[in-house]
Amino acid sequence: MILESLLAYLHILAILTLVVFISSEAALCRGEWMNAAVVERLAKVDRIYGLAAVAVLLTGLLRIYLGAKGAAWYGGNWLLHVKLGLFAVVGLVSIRPTLTFIRWRRALRADGTLPSPEEIRKTRRLVMLQAHLVPLIPLPAAFLARGFGAG
Image 1: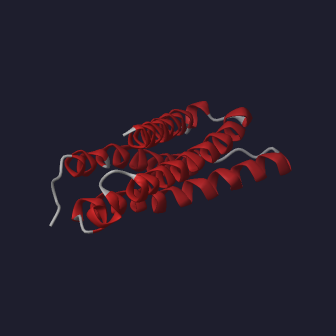
Image 2: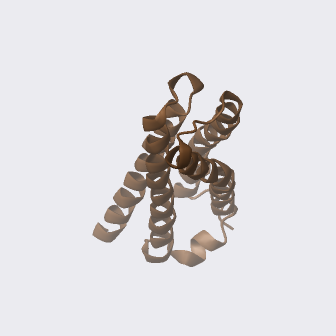
Image 3: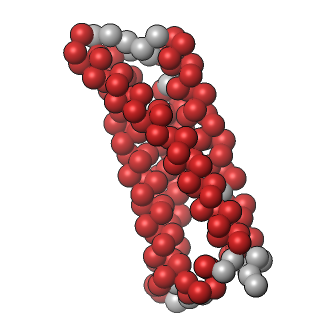
């Protein structure tokens, strides 16, 4: 029971960290606020967001394999696949903003160039898509935790 509680705590902590940093990206990625410091900060915030996503995945896997219900129960539950699918979609959507933030930082460091308003708008749209998809992931998780979807 202690292990299960600790795994749940670590998973929730990782999720909250992910939410904080995707929210930070959404707040920072605005044309009217874009300057050199924001470009640098976006790259750092995105790195932490990525690490938080890895922590969410790893702690989730630990809960599956070391938790009370076990891998066999989770593996056969379609709700887990929905949850992982949503997580994968968020991960795929995050690739382009990550590469964009890296490119912006390189351009800034090379010659002081800031991103164009159109580039910022396009990137912000993808960040906002992630920020709106992330809250959907706990819905199947809530049902999963209560035994729905098995068998």
